[in-house]
Image (cartoon, rainbow, N blue to C red; front, top):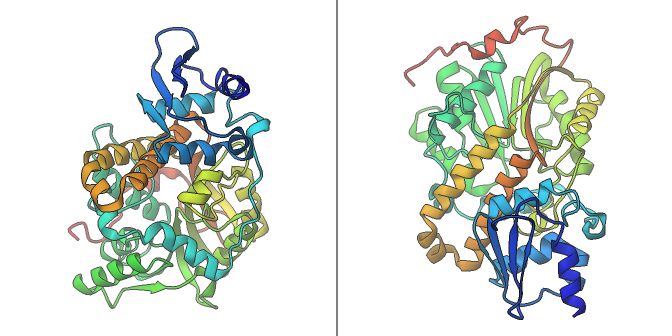
Length: 398
């Protein structure tokens, strides 16, 4: 009886859409007015102590283990919970501080490899052919994901106002699409660093296969280990949300250190307008050590590192669409993924993708591009944003 009262208190104000909850004892409750849009079934009671200790971990694990089933859109359910002021996401009774995170160079490598070294074959099943695992940029409503990812790469590079023959460092280079595009189409000499062995292997092979060894280099190296090397430009996509709260200041300081005087950097990553945050379930299963910094927190670190801001752009709606397409692709290959990775992993990853889409949709998280300069802001950039949308590639047939 006590458990049912607890669940009623937990769930009755957690959603801003009508939701039916089927309990383990055969009883049902519908919370909210109107026709239920989602049905949640508890096959067994999740211990109250687990939920009060960390609701996101307890409920996420229960879904992964099949103790909770959801009929309807997981994205819609989670988005409604983010929108509800009294939900377990927003109620202080169910929020718990995360344990202190370690971000030594060894720990950072372990964290990155735990996520990205699942295997290139896995990511190929649901990413687009560019193998880009970050927010796309939809210039047109009709863009495919591949087109939007290519648009994103050019949008980032063009913001730098790149000049042929100059140097670019890509911190957290992923599978190499951005750095190799900069080399082939913009005439830059590029270095990419990653902590993922799988990514390093693929990028090294691409450089060799495409005959780019004279203008492109990839390193399996921590970005903090580059010594006194300097570059005209720096790009870093989806990186600052992985370094941890305690290392954010160092991250921006390293960007400043590696930039030449009057150099330009474009730093693109997940941010919150409401202030920095962690999530217990994501930290445990998806991104160990992850911390989503607040917008003003990043700006403060940028200024304190000796950099100046030239431009900030929010791409929240673009990442919502990106994650929605990823989840569609993922579920189109669900049977093959279950066979390769197992049912529990598959449920976990589907939950992760839909939860991300919901979080972007609700404005709980955002993604922003910070264009920064070493020296007076925009000293070597055109006066207006018009240049960002011009096609200044030197090799359009690459």
